[in-house]
Image 1 (cartoon, rainbow, N blue to C red):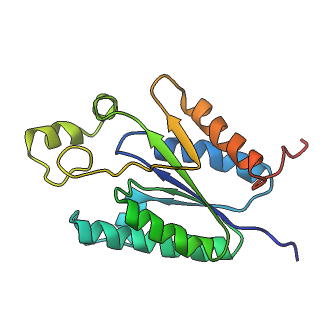
Image 2 (cartoon, rainbow, N blue to C red):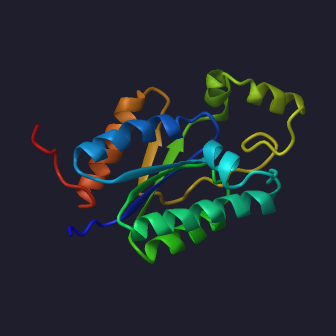
Length: 185
């Protein structure tokens, strides 16, 4: 039986930064290199694991705590787990990190994009509703986002393609020895 080392990549940033898009580019590359990959997307988790939670700080903390716990179990099993969740509070991200690091590596990926750029990209119209006050407790508008102060990877998506952002993540994983080189075709 081969031993796999689990890793969690925790993509954090405002709604619309490209967290999920970048993760969906990184994942297949990791699979091509032999990794077993699983995705924990914030929207999907809210549908299946955290249904019924609102957007108060307590509910957001509960949601991120659940994601962190699941990520820790997957990491323990040797999976490379790609978490794409706004996760606005530094203390809750730190708690998720602590759970994961019991079993493997935790790589925080800060997908840094301005609120103005996120609003331009917003196909659902959520930012417009938040700016008008129709949506309360919207991260980055009427609710805080505590940006990571020392992430392992800091991506500025403005002026960079999702593919370039994903390449930055892969390069950092290689530099840290968390993934191997390309698998021969």
